Each structure stands twice: as structure tokens, then as C-alpha cells.
Length: 310
Image (cartoon, rainbow, N blue to C red):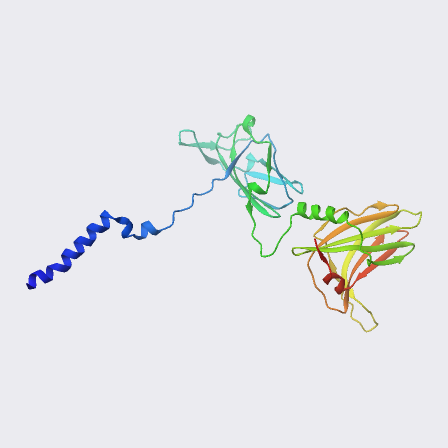
């Protein structure tokens, strides 16, 4: 009887083992419960040749560009266009290139002789306002080299930010929308030298202020804008006051400063900012010398707080 009781746990363990093999879903193990691995995303390959300039045309302004090796050089041709080109002088004496059969072959440096097709030249990384792009760079004959690579946000990896960010294209679209709106009846304005500077509207989108202003010229003398300054300044300045103006730069503006005769209408975009009640947000237009006509508009913090949602 004692032998039977001692053997009973062993028989029970064998029976449970058999059941787990017969019905694996009833006894899941670690391998079965582990989530499947996500497949790795393959980078797109761009083919280069030393006689061909390859340009990347992005749908947004390029913030930064990075080349992982010195075998390729590049620069910004325009705010949204990056151009690159192989520089064979920078290649090492012996560069291993993978042949079609998978064999490694020697590729000695030569300005005149081409590299074997398929030689890796590194990788390019492009950072725009709202997305990231990466491409593998591979050497190819001139007839197969890429000349233009057009990319949009759908081709990149979205950049995650804590607050709502806008691309320059989105800012431009909002500015054009604001430009078509009528000025507020109680618009803040100032006059000087037979000129009028007016705050038409003030809007907020995400973490940005959109400041819509118009400068009217009631004289027959054209106005040549030298600079437009934005700053947070003290409301009242006395002799004992330690003046500490804070200069602000717009993140975007719809139009550049220009020469005009009757009217200058523009929208400026700023990252949201705050300031104490004893200060004001000022917009100053200054004319080129010799005339030097200046006009300044002061905006209270309460006006910023009353900005409308777009």
C-alpha cells in the first residue's frame, strides 16, 4: 500500500505531461504567450554615381541632414531640397563591395575607375519639421543612378511632440485663411507720420499665435521696410527703470518685408508666449534711411488672452 502511495504522484505527473502535449492550448508556455516580433522595416535604397547629383525634394522645410560616411557629400540647395553626390577621393584604399553572387571583392580607390555596382556608401538621414526620413545609399552605374527623389510625410516616420506642432505648409494655409477675414471692429491701431499700423486679428492654433497686421501709408511717398521688430517691453519707462526688452522672432511669416505704396498686409506666427501685466507686446516697423519713418503698435496681454480659435 505504501509503495502505491509513493508511486501515485509520479503517475499523476506523467499523465499531466501527456495531456499538455495532447492539448497545448490548455497548458500555454512562455513561447506560446510571447507576442510575435514585428517585422523590421526595410529602408529604401537610393542609387548614386559620382557624375550624377541626386536631389531629395521634401514636402516640408528640411531642419537637418546627416550622411553616415564621408563617401558622400551634400548640402541644402533650397529650404526643402537636399543634394548629395559620391566623392570617390574619400573612399578607403580597400573597400569591400558585395558582388551579385555574394562574394566580397576588392574595390581599390580610383578616380577614373568606377566602383563595383552594389557598393554601400552609407546612409542619409533627413529631418523635416514633422517627420524623419532614412535611406540606404548604394553605388550604381550612371544610367541607373537616381536623379530626383520626391518624398512626403507619408514616406517618413512621424515625429512625436508633447504639443501640437505645425509644419510651414500648415502655417501658410492658416495664414492665407486669416488673410481673407475682415478686421475686428475694435482692432488695436496706432498712427504716426500719416501712417496707420493696425492689428486686424489675433488667432491661436495649437501652441502658436497668428498675428494679422496691416500697415497703411496715407502719403504719396513709398515706404521701404528696413526691418520689422517684435519685442516685449515695459509699459512705462522712467529714468530709474532698468529697461530689459525681450526680442521675439516669428516662427513663420507669410510674406517678406518689402517696398510698398499704399498698404502692407501680413500674418506673423509666434510660439505661444506670456509676459507680466506691466509689459506690452510691441510691433515696430522701421523704414530704410534716410527717411527713417518709424511706427510702433503696443498690444496688451489682455488682447493676447482674447485671441480667437481658428
